[in-house]
Amino acid sequence: MKKIVLIGKFNLALQGLNKHLSQNHDVQICVDNYDMVKSMLASIKPDLIIVCLIELGMPALGIFGELRNNYSSTKILCIGTKEEQECFTEYLQLDNFNILARPVSNEKISEIANLLLTYGKNTETADENFTEEVSSAEDGRKNILCR
Image (cartoon, rainbow, N blue to C red; front, side, top):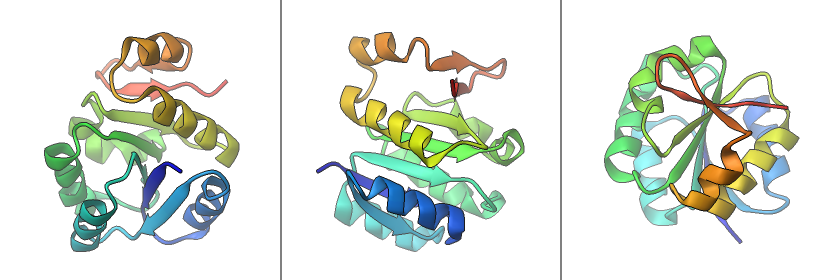
């Protein structure tokens, strides 16, 4: 079973996503505390990291720095509105970061997570399969389009 770490504020959205993803994956929730995130990621070694940007804001910059510096080969899916993404533009442009715009259903998040887990990091197969799913924003960020 693939391992997913779900990072964000502990709220109903995160709980619902955890419940949905746990049907097919080994999912661990980690609140947005830098030390807890660092420790959990080191011990779990996830196949995918999902960051729920709801209510995160500037204090989460340390978490994004950790992801950039130590998890560049791990796929990362960030879920949030355009406004929620603005704090993290520098990081969201990196190759292993993918953005899914809210509002989005848990089913669509699960579908995108499965694509990321199946095709891994920067392979030609992944690029071919994401052709319809991913577009580049004007500022260089990758946006996953929800059909």
